[in-house]
Amino acid sequence: MILLRRLLGDVLRRQRQRQGRTLREVSSSARVSLGYLSEVERGQKEASSELLSAICDALDVRMSQVMREVSDELSLAELAESATATEPVPTPVRPLNSVSVTSVTGVPEERVTIKAPAEAVDVVAA
Image 1: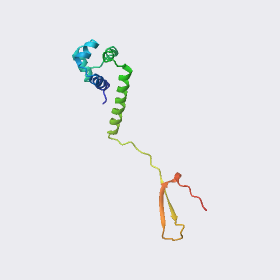
Image 2: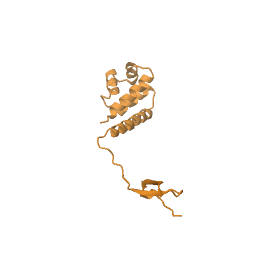
Image 3: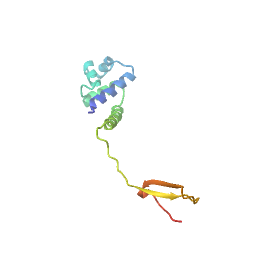
Image 4: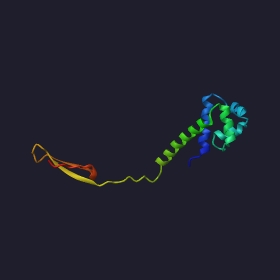
């Protein structure tokens, strides 16, 4: 199961680490306890919109950018989750027709059989 709070925490942590800042610096700037910010980054606590806004302001990053990164991470997580699904996705099966072709050189031993979907074969008599 994909947890949005965990993805959000990962993005916030990466933003902070890219800036080379500590939890203490960001928590002080956002006016949130160091422990609570740590729990948000680890995906253990849900961040309210007000708290998320304060953290984004402290990181000097737009909330829309953070949410875009979270959306990208969510898309990748969903793809990975569906790829590991136990039931394979059925693929449609189209019937194949066999077509025999005799060589234009006139040698009867040269025969080729082509298997193709029925709608893909167009035979024109000359």
